Length: 272
Image (cartoon, rainbow, N blue to C red):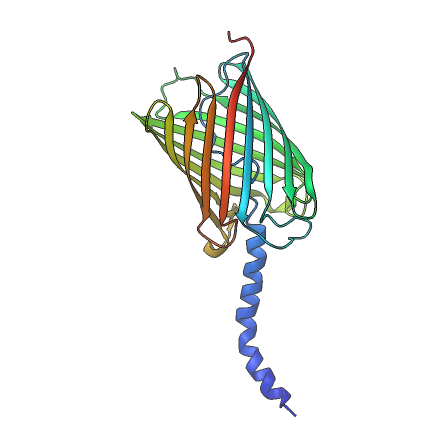
């Protein structure tokens, strides 16, 4: 019969690393609250006064999370759609509404949530070293797609242009208004984009999306999300845009292979 004390002595040294791995797994799940419906770095420009625009964001996760995290469904194999209607209230203020839908294994196509957004930008006449904007967004999601049914997102927008080059940085902060993480404060989810106009109709870009944890309680490096999306944007008309991107995750904490697309077209409206 095996000596129980010997077995105990062998298992004891493993307790600390096993506990650390368990804690890391928990932290990883808490740190992947990235937006998988609208994968976009917000620009400085807003819709013109009186203008209406329609945007569609269609994304597919090829390699992602394969198990449920509480009530949140696995992301691998999911197709997500965000339909966005934007209106220019003034020359420097736009508002938008979203409807979200998704298709996942075992559930098929279903309604996933809604969003309301407002974006302001500083006038170009202001003597600022960079172009500045601010986006405020209220996000509502069904339990299968977020552990928070209601979230507030604040997105400062910084943009700088050098000839054919354009650089954007969006230091996103997000706060759950309901759900298990409501007391944990603001979460850091930075985004950035570097783009170059290859021609009048083609723009090449590299985009970055991160999820670092909460302010004052950043996740360890292995549990953070760092994704990079090489992308191409095609101008199909005066105001019609089509873009594609392929995202690769640098850590195992988030989705590791994602395909994203976006289509933007004007719907008319008076431009004053």
